[in-house]
Length: 445
Image: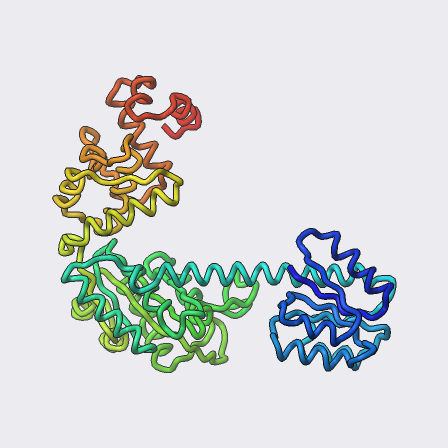
């Protein structure tokens, strides 16, 4: 961090410089006049400690020149007099802090600079996170595939991005990537710097759903010890994503309809109207029109939510995309787990193409990750590609598991198959015997 010290008093100039240089992260340069400092302003300091009473220029004028050059430079004003009205004026015009020259100057200045440093680190982290999110949901990279079925989806996603506030309804089987499509739309829209709030309508208990969506006032019900904002307010100026929208109770649908129509909500237990500005994206694996016919879903809400419909094809209709996706998952898994790069053999690729993938893209990802774990070579062979282990009746992909849980299932299968011969199993799986013993000891096997 580059810090410029502008101070005409030799004692304070050296005092500030000395204490700042004790921190190896600080690059410090000192100046005794406003002109000498402004001549070097092009070197772009992060922080300027600026004496209010310089001999050649007014400190207030110097601060204004700094802020005009770069509003992001933090200016800490230092004065020999404690003048509240001057301090307030400087702070209003952009000074980060106002410090008087007294016995506490060192502690106050170092504390102020520490606060600036902490805030800057947080900003850098946020910017880095925004960059990562932007790259992750880059339209050209987020949804992979070249099949005819997916190209139709691409064109609809482009329309959803262009028409920035239109409601979007996404339909597709479990594991086809409905939330990924929703996030891609959001992070390529004008709302991308605002919240994306996902709500799984099937995962929230019925009695809590209204409070979860609309928030509640303190004392609205037993346990409501504080006021709480709901998902609609949390998503303000951004996007709210209703996953499994077909699971919403019929009595709550009326309130959702009102919120969408009026763009306003009322917290549970309250009377005040709260305006909300959100884009709505919904997802379901059901045919909502059929749900309307069965009386499970309100017809008026159905038409409100339909908006731009996007139907995601199952992976079985995207044969050209299977190897593209498998190769992507292979690269990502090896990278995330610091593993050497691996490739599929021709036979492994052919085997991947023969399967029907009832779990769609999500299942393919799990199969690829398991194949990486099972392979002992740089080339993943067809025997490493497991759709369902034999002789156990166990479907590894019936539920999502962590890599550690997959390992436990695999090792347990091999132990049973080889009469609990730990040495033999360790050799077959190319892992240490101690790992198996530790997992047995820890109750994982």
